[in-house]
Image 1 (cartoon, rainbow, N blue to C red):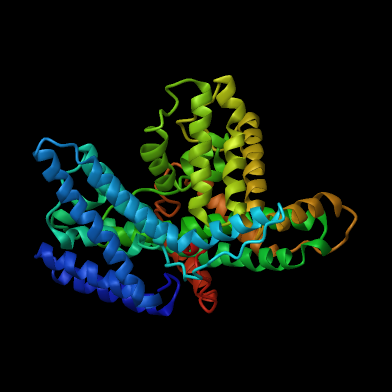
Image 2 (image 1 turned 90 degrees about the horizontal axis):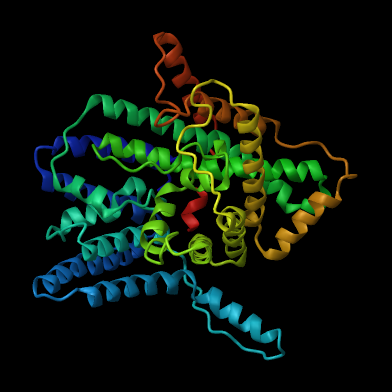
Length: 475
C-alpha cells in the first residue's frame, strides 16, 4: 500500500480511530498495530508476510536463548551468530543470489570459460533489507547486554513490522522502538498535530518535488546521447532532488504517522544538501542506515582507533556494504566505493573537519566560504547520483561521456516546473533548517498558516493520479 494512494487515505484514519479506541489496553493496541501492519504489507503480496514472520520468530527466540545461555555462564555468541547468519542468508538468497551467479559466469566468460549459471528469478520482497537489519539490531543488542530479551511476542512483532516504517525505514534500533511498544501510549494532541504537518510536508516532497523531477529525469535518461551537456547536467541535479524528495519524503510521512500513534521514530534526514563536506553529508543522509553500519560494522572492525590505514579499510568496508545494501548491481558497488574514495584525502591527512553545528547558525545567509563548501559537496554528491541512477556501468560511462562531449548539442532545457518546485524545497528547508522538519514552523497569522497548508495540500492532490512508487521500495 502506497502512502500516496487512495487506499492509504482510507486505511490511516480507520486504523487511527480503532487504535485510540482501544488505548486503555496495551495488548490490544499492539495487536491492532500488528494486524494493521499485516494488511498494509500484504496489500502488495500477502505471501511475503510469512517471510517477515520467519525473520521475526528467529530473532524473537534468539533473544530468549541468548539470555538463557548467559544465565548459564555462557556467552550466547553461537546463538547470536546463528540468527545473524540465517537472516543474512534469507536476504542473500532473495536479493543477491542471481546477481553473484551471473557475475561469476561473466567473470569466467572473460577468460573463455562458458558457465551456465543457475538463477532463481525470485521476486524481491518489498523492504526486506529494512526489516532484516532492524531484526538483526535486536539480536546484536541483546547479545551485547544493551537490551533485555522480551517475552512478549506481540510487542516484538509490533516493533518489527510497525507499518509506517516497515518497507523503507527509518531502520529503528530495538533499544529505541521496542520499549515504546512495552508501555501504554497516551494520545497527545500537540504531537498528533505536529505529525500531521510532517506528513503533509513529506507528501509535498514526494508527490510534488520528486515525481515532477522523475518525469524529466526518466525522459532524459531514455535518450541521453541526443541531449546537450547542460540538459544532462540539469537532469543529474534533478535526480538528486528526486531521490531526496522521494526518500526523505517517505521518512517524513513515516515519522509523522508514528507521532499520530504515540510512537517516536528516529530522524532519518537532516538537510543533507546543506552539508559542507562529504563526511557531514553522510551524517545527515539516511541517518538510520549509516549509524547502523557504524555501530555494527565500523566500530567492531576498530573504527578510527587503530591508525589511518585501518581506518581507511574500515571506511571502504562500510561503503562497500552500503552500496551492496542498496541493490544487486555493480553500479551500487561503484557508488559506494566512489563515496569511500571521497574520504581518502581527509583520512590519510588526518585532518577531517567535523561540523557539529547547523550551517550559517548565527545568520540567515551562509558566508562565501560556507557557500563554496556546500556547492562543491553538492556537486560531488550529484556526480555520485549519476552512477546510482544508471542501469549499468555502461550506461553510467555513456551518460558521463555525453555530459562532457555534447557541449555543442542544442536542445531546450527541460523541467522548468520541476526546477521551480526543487527551488521551493530548498528555500523552505533552508529557512527551517534548525527545526525538526520544515513544517515545524509557527506563523502567528492563522489565515497565512492555513493558507500554506491548503496550498500544499492542493498541490499534492493535483499529483494524486500518478501514485508513483517510492524509489527505496526496491531496496
